[in-house]
Amino acid sequence: MNDESKKPLDSADQIEDIELPISEDDRTTFKRLDQFLAEKTHFSRTFLKKLFEAGNISSETKLSLNKMPATGTIVSIDVPPPVNLEAIPQNIPLDILFEDEHLVIVNKQAGLVVHPAPGNPDGTLVNAILYHCPDLSGVGGVIRPGIVHRLDKGTSGVMVVAKNQAAHEGLVLLFSKHDIDREYEAIILCDNAKISSSGKLESTIGRDPKNRQKMAANVRGKKAVTHYNVISFKKDFAHVKCKLETGRTHQIRVHMSGLLQCPILNDPTYGDQARHRKRLPPFLAEIVKPYEHPFLHAKKLGFIHPVTKQALSFEVEPPEIFKQVLEGLE
Image 1 (tube, one colour):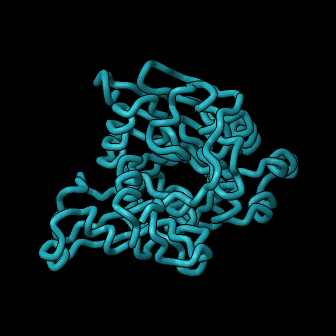
Image 2: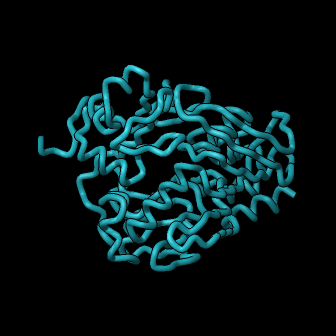
């Protein structure tokens, strides 16, 4: 077949996340991981190779397409939504914290989508990066050039983008091994929940079986671990710091709302924006009302440079509206 992938499902039932456990029978039947994945997913090996090179095929241990992993390994495949148009360069302002010939560190603003997808064909971070780095289009795939991790549309903060294939492959390995120091800040609604000043939140995270647009804790999915510390309690709210051991989709949002029972302020997916605003003083509710995003900020990102091996760490303070809300809750 000449197409990029065979289609096991109707387009209306588009797969986004696939998890495949390796059994002893699988190891007997298949000699290579790409053969196993092609059989189980019906994707072509060419398409699977592109996913692998983009960092979209992963597990808790290092994988190789020409070798079967150990029995019990769970192989995760993140399939990008189909996008018909190639990402085009667009002159969108970037807040660049650091740049060398291998990578660029940006402070992403809330409201900026990371990569093109249905409903957001352009105006994304990828479009901005392609304008800033014209030679980036061949790195990590056409639709997500240079992207090795994501922040949700509504999350602000530090992101790293690879500028060449060597940096891309090195960063993908660091993220897959969780050798990244990531720290977030959030404002959460505690309401009547009694929470400790610090704690460890651990669960699996996977697609919510009742709503495929959401993620859920303690369903069939990937292991997720979040450590949190309360910076300060403020009436019905708390200002918290979160450190990630893993980096699952919506991880902090799911753990705060699902395990701690304290949704992030203004989260439209895992909370109730109208109820959240009612808990705020009236003047703060008016400030927050036009702000559509959860109060979640990726404050710190630290890692070993994949090429120079230099230890790098970047921190950026939350947006001004964070400070307004925290000061208003005093």
